[in-house]
Image (cartoon, rainbow, N blue to C red):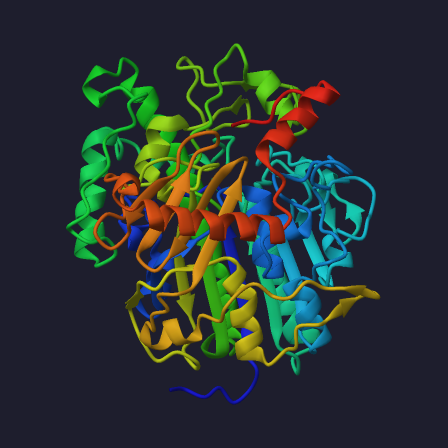
Length: 538
């Protein structure tokens, strides 16, 4: 086992709405040489789980708690006192707070999405949650050419996007590199914690033409053939067991041969791929900066996605209302041209004048070989690629680990390798005990803990896993039981064959939900009805 001579730097990179099998080293067609290189000389986890949605995943990742415990059970909307506050509460502490207290320099470049007030500085802004330096957005999504709530530390800098060369993914990468260089210049004696939170490839489909051109024709074979090809590559890489059959095409998605707008559909996925490609280019620049400054070998570098591929559609008749529900939508570009929201086959997505999604058909490809999507607790909603690279701390090169882990384990792992102490209080308020378990044993020898329970809940979609068994349900539907060793693609529901196991795992879930402040979905929906608000997306 390697023994680092100093405390490692931590670089945590999060993609937004990217599926399990999109990047090259997880079977995808998208060119991601920098992530592939990290995987080849590092470790890939095949069964790491997020929390199926943007804000909750970020809250869990940053705090080591389940999202409901932090006040962010759905998104960053304030539904208190009856619902979730939508903002980090006083009972949690972030990785940045713990590490800054342990002498780390702490920087964030990218999306925050854990404060309900996007315009007035509150205790839940990143600069009040342990980050000494912040550049990014407070809201959850938006234009890549004119992002709203763009902030440097606590000052709005939306004017920076007036530069005609501005592209948000590049800006996130540029500032991440600048933070590394600033750290070396000002505090070289301290270790660095850098959190890089991309919005790519979250809708809208906005990409640079030079990147889009790389994928011209790449997806013209269609989702049916490409899903089969991805599965073959996943099996060859040792990420997916050949015994697990590919899930059927989503029944709401037509066969590729029946699609009328094939060129437009292929173009949608090409723009999505370009967004991921550009993110990988930026990751490469961060890695290069670490290498140039002699930091790379003793840096724990982690990459993952906040949820599975997003099946949200934007039909033209509903597009403007859909967009404005979630983000501050601008109807015009920076130079006054109209922005057309929605998936219009007469408009090729990508430029600033469009505002589209890649939709359910391509999300089904992104989540190959699993079913379901962002929002749901089935494998397609919660499974993420997870790459770990730390030359001085982990000897394995190109290793693949299959032990299940989830977001709460990132904080526990960081504490384990840095020696930083998890506090009992924050600003005089008790902090809830850490929920996660360190992944170091897994990363070094794939140790197995068959007794550990993993839990999820989002919008009434629920799940619990123990060893090889996973109990899962959609809101208001029956529980399903799957053997994850024989059937990780969740095709053979065994609930009827194991009623006692269903009963015991359901009881464990209900105990966890009560302990972790999960608000029953029925109560949330009643709250929305009572307030006359539109129902949140199911």
